[in-house]
Image (cartoon, rainbow, N blue to C red; front, side, top):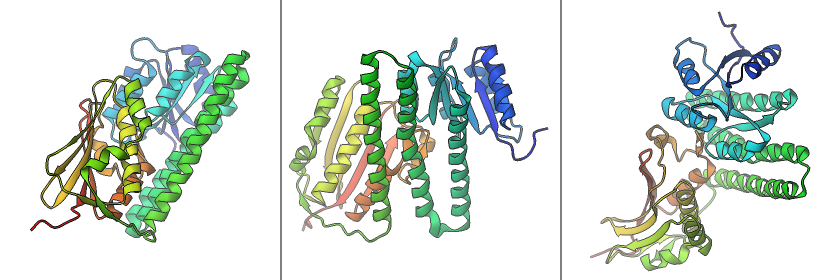
Length: 364
């Protein structure tokens, strides 16, 4: 029988030696440890209803059959609230660890494992889990605390990702001897600090918007101005991936009310995400008359979003690498313009974001 209060960790690694070492060392740290040799076995264990959930997965990347990233993606699809995952990988696979974090992984540590560093990473993951539990309790007890709790949870996740990358790159830099690798890792550390700065700015902006103290000035914008809001950098990113980027305006679409600068920021963020998660095909911006409102949409042919993430996508929370403060900010900005934003998506079939804004002039 499991002892109450202890956190349960699942080790997934094809090496019996590593599984045994992990089990022994983590057990001495006070954790309950299960270990399996493959992604399939991990799925089977997670599906068992023992009444004692797995809180954290330590996931090897290079395994026969299903690798770590594929296992992680399958776990996200199969479980509505999957455990947090940390990748344990060799120095030569650091690019895969970065890809893992882009897809929503919590963090990574390098082999051979430094158990002091692993212990710190596990503590951070469990702190995040505790914050989520506290947030859920606050929402259940007091609806008025919802926005504040959401922003705290968002800040935790937003700050953690770039900091984890910085820590991981710093570990790799310490172990690297060639000048070329040192320069490359230093550049990545700088990029990650910039991401951290952007996360801080996002959370501050979300807090200000959520306070109700910000007012939005809107004015008439015409559909042919939409193309002017798209930065050239966005077009370059699409071209570099071989994707199309189209702007289609329905005939006789009227002017609408918006803040030009803020609408530009929203479209830029939606387009960046669309390009990031699209491998083939492209991205289309459309404008059309809906009668009482004008609809602006950004649609892609990318990987799509699991349906169970959609209801909370704009709440400011991270779920499986999806959402976060930026989409929460987009929602708040659109609402300050007197509009609304919606999302439609199916996993593997692309995503469509639609912004509905008020017409600038009444049609008599």
